[in-house]
Amino acid sequence: MASSPKDFAAGAVLTAAQMDSLPQGVFAVATATADVGPTSGTTELDVVTASAVVLLAANRRLKLTFAWRGLSGATSGDVYTLRIKEGATVLMESTQAPSGALGQLGGTMVRHLPSPTAASHTYKATIQRAAGTGTVSVQGNANYPIQLIVEDGGEA
Image (cartoon, rainbow, N blue to C red; front, top):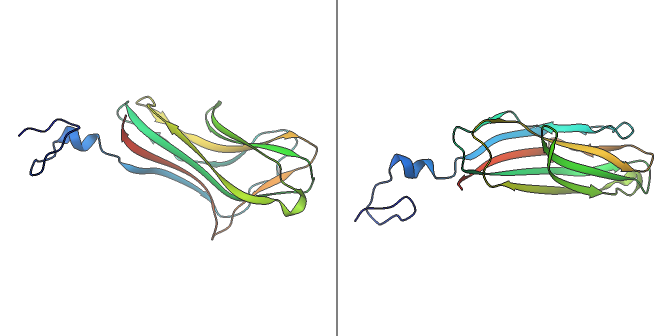
């Protein structure tokens, strides 16, 4: 019995086209093993940038995951926006309000891209003060690094 690309029968052999539609795993991991910052005014600060991901075919699914250990700010009441971006395009953002010098627990943002173009893509994570007067650092260390992970989820 012949198999279509989405229907695999026991004993059938995977074709090259079927193999190409499978997830290809992790494309890039950007890691910072020390605190990044502090921010300066309302200027957006790059936290980590993943190496360029080159998609040879469109119609892939990508998953971007940004994880940080915590935020440490000196001014209570300040508000900061963390973003995942490609160039100037914001793909995902999260607003955080660290509570003074002790900061707050870390977090994770995930963005699924259903079908990016077949081209080179560079993704980065940033932070920017949205309200208040203080500064903040994004926390990371060797045991709990700041990371931006780009994964392929297979054919869309």
